[in-house]
Length: 365
Image 1 (cartoon, rainbow, N blue to C red):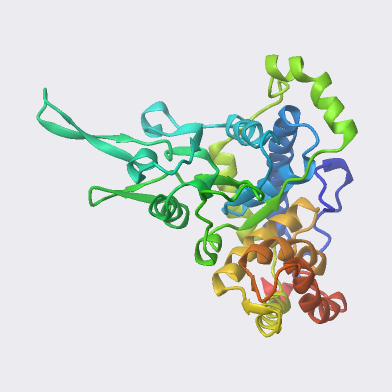
Image 2 (cartoon, one colour):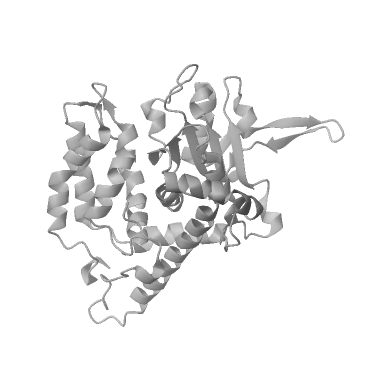
């Protein structure tokens, strides 16, 4: 993944001109806003990387999903560092609201999914208090900025559905009451790709709620040695003493990325054409949904921002779409690679985009 957080190395805003007679103040405001977003991403990346070694690419994708307001499904092996990664991300975010406005929201919560888990175990429940004669709602672990849903395929479909409603709507329903979750709400769900005994595999309709599905492989030898060498240092100072990001900064960054990173109409056309090419492939039984394309747009814009651009280009599609599409495709035979099918479908559209000027012009303002 050709993503960089080196602020000194980026080529920035080469597409923003003066607007054909405009004094450029509006463009300048956009530049400063995008520059600030890159700084937020860099700080979050550095903070998480200080606690998690050898997972730079996974951290980048997870930060992409966080800034694109999506959720991530990790396929991993036990002991691969998923809890450390999710906890480090949660602890890298500080709630900058006044104490009275925070409510029951925690920075990070881990939910271990088991077959006997009930929806109320994650959503919360109403408790009767004899002294007051009233029911009081006690929030569950889902009320957090970052939630690690560990082994999501080990719990019943009823519990899975409760979590996925929260992911889609950022709200929970308890005792016929609808309660909002925090605007930052971000889920990292995991499943073991090998141990399938006693599991409830997520159907495609539920997998569609996740922006990315990321396969975590074992880290290389050098990274594993670094993990062992830095154990004590990371235990004593897991964030490396680096500056955190605030909840408000992330929410503002999401809004700025969607408003200021330009998506050319030709890119929108390419998205639809690629989706139709995948759907018409004879190897594909069920293609990608329109929701997948909607979710892909902020991910493409975020990737463009992280790569030092204020517009989406063909490289963003080439890198992002295989991760967005792979878990949404139902294939006709085992052994087929959804990423390869996606790449084949992308080729004609990417060739057209490579010859086009995708930058923002005065006419697009």
